[in-house]
Length: 501
Image 1 (cartoon, one colour):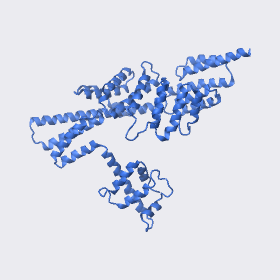
Image 2: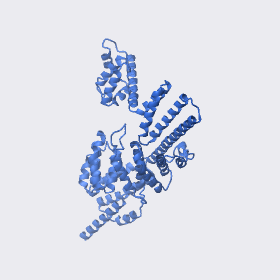
Image 3: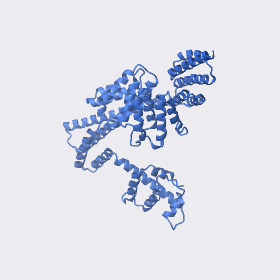
Image 4: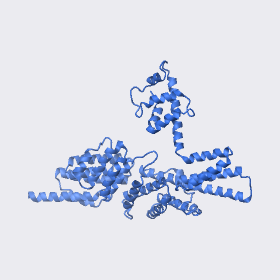
């Protein structure tokens, strides 16, 4: 079998990267083994799928060594060497895309080689470039490294140990400590937030001991008050609010402080930094919206942040250029729930091509199924529902709810009962949902089952009593729709009674 590790590495390369990797192998400075080039050119013919039947070690060996008897160890060594060359290529690619990392290493080399003039010119250029960049955690990391480089350089080469020189060194020490502290606080709060996101998403009550106790020893607000630069205080205030928002119970005011601070200083932040805070604001609004917290209009804020995310393509990273399917769905569902139907339709038409091609067809079918369901065009909704590949796409709560509604409104009661049983199974099998959240959906399925059964059996006797009981149930989703349908069935049956009489 051909080396899986090597095949996975080559498969991960884009066509342009594959071409650059060939240049890499052909460079005598980087590679002196001609057989690696030959092996690469053979494997390249199988790119990108590498699944042809002729891709065997024996065939590869025969092409490399036509006159020799097959020897497995020779080929294993070549695979290993080519894989190692591939890893070196990936490091070089990443390194070439990180200009500051190159400059940081160059400064260290210049210092070690006593190239003082080169060092001074280079570090001054680096300072200028970093100072012109937007604020982020990496900004403070870079400032720390530059201050540290200049301090170490001055200690070695500046022999004037007078008071003024020592004061300058102390200033470098103080500045580097400040930047290191800012970077540390931003990074550790980021990790604290990640633990909360995972805990909430997967219904975990116990956070890791170390990180949950760390902030007993850190007073972010006191540190912020000791910083002179207003823009640095703003970003530290932003992170302090973010931590408090995820650590305290009644957080409406803290949320507003966080949102307002973000809006105040967002123009100073890098795109990645804005994307990070936009994501946290969205997550918080989603959690409050799902709790049905009516003390503040979180739904309106949620749509504002979703629109900011789409307008600025915050979902794009170096690793992923596609709009995630779950995010596409979440934005669409929220817009439809808020009655922003025109925007929802425009959003689908403008953004579905940004979804990965493997998910694109299913997601646009899902999108129009939900769109026509929310706009009460049930026959059109059913058409798109039938186009969704259920073996490929796993329905979520909103989709299950919409299926039930569509089948009811179209009088497809037997299909509706099947959909409800599938929904109940889905709820019970979701190990990451809290008991309280499950209960509101199970209550819906309980009363919806009665509704469908009544329709099928033409039995109205229990309806008035069940509607009375339904009115007293608080933890239930789509209660208004159920009440409306219960009353509608009651009126239909009352009319039928009068006609029969």
